[in-house]
Length: 274
Length: 306
Image (cartoon, rainbow over all chains, first blue to last red; front, side):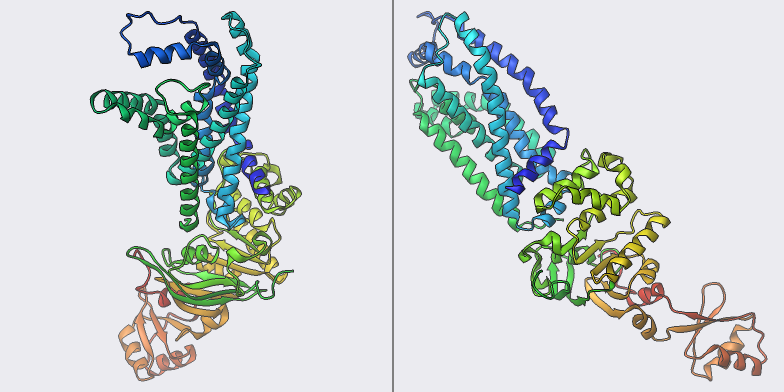
């Protein structure tokens, strides 16, 4: 536990955490406004040129409960990005700032250090989740009332979505530490993770859309293997038509976290530190 | 108290093979407590790699490096047993010196107050709340020593600690290390600055190209050098004197500035030989071999880039 404390102390004593906080706040605000605007659209007209599945998805998404789960998990996209980058930097900064030597001299059992970093990443994930969730609980009821949908705050599905959102933050934190060990260069790690996370999601969706249209429909179901899609699926309020069940998303994400975690620890144990 | 004997450093047939380079080659030596041991060798001799293997940062290809019989990784409380200063620039640029030390205290389970005591010991208290990027190279070395002393360890290992220190800083460090050794601690200091080691070290371990060249007390290594004493002679009649000295079985080699360097006979004998041969002398002086010369002779042809 003192090692987790030391890891959190490392983050607290540099400028990194408040830079990330400053980045997160406006991104949260923008996301909230976009989610609000998206919830405001009415049902699609019949001749809009969409497939049956798509129109079923849109109709499902416009049900009050799904609007609510979407809004109450606002901040997930960028919040997780911040958690992912912070978690990776917890590892890469040790090599970037040549502090790995000091760290491993103080704690020669390297698996203990990596475990502490996982612990710190989980705590960061929980904290960012807590901040966005508190903000959501303040602002979303106002928006829901504005949309004439009621706050929906009593619905179990809303709280399940908030809970699964927490799981997503935690799992992405673990994933970040694993990724940081695999990509030791700080610049490469942050760039690769940020680009893959932000642009990659759109690119991957497009690739899967094309594959499913021109090769085979079932390929679309493999999209859940992409971490960002898995995380999105996991927190969606009710099972949307045409998507795999929600637990599949959770399993995929946990799988990634476990694999990067074990691989990262194993690599750190056998590497020479110089 | 720890297991007995962990304050003795034992390097036993240690070898590190990188892809093409054998950085450390079957190296064995021991370092005793209560003395300052100089770990000497030219750049690239494998000193840093040896220290990193000793501290569990680099895995040896073969052999062991231990404290007593225990590996660093197996020490129950390494920070209280061994302190090490490996890189002068190993702290986060944006973190203050005090926070750098507190970070180590927290990971090692030491009270935060140790950070301030260590800062005081190395004279960094006025700069405690300054960020590391504002530290001079000398201040960084001092911070490194402070970090190593946090756990009040019995063994202190320093890799090229004199780098970047001004003369005053070097003297400060020399006094500190001697004082720590006199308290019964083990002090191992690597360096390529030989003059400094001559003033500081009690024992020396000399390596080149990853191999042990010599080990022993400084005096012994200096004294053992064949022709440890040499005589410098300056004369306008070099040829005549060389001929005269040849009869005495002395070795004469031309020195740098037109002088002659004579091994194997003492100054008095040379003076007598010159007198009987009617050779004029302008200089006749005995020179003790210093560590620098010993070192250059011992590592000749083995130094340099590998």
